[in-house]
Image 1 (cartoon, rainbow, N blue to C red):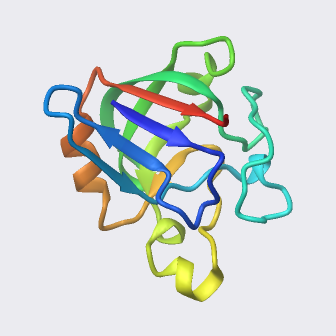
Image 2 (spheres, rainbow, N blue to C red):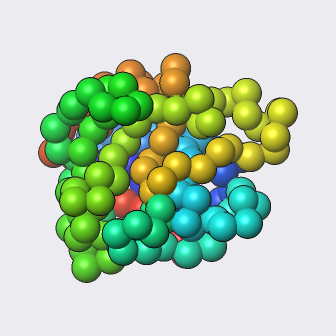
Length: 143
């Protein structure tokens, strides 16, 4: 499973992977939506499940199929809660993006923002997909 801890700023590795069988854990940087951080501070201020909000949604997601889209290889997410049940229709997915690369931190102090998707660095996407696969849980929240 994966847990995204949105209490942390985008400059911190806040996408946590937990292998519940082995107990091993790892972390990566992940971007949030521009509608969740309108002032581009690097901190998520709010979630939304609304169409056109460009905000990230909170709650439990189920990883679905892969496809190739605007950002290359991507993975669909199915929202399992009332706070994210529009995720599939809103096209809230996992994808890679230049603005989520590690080199954004030394040069800008934070990652760029998505349109609500969970964007990871371009060279990290294969790691994410090999760990998650289809039918796994992603949980995004702010404590």
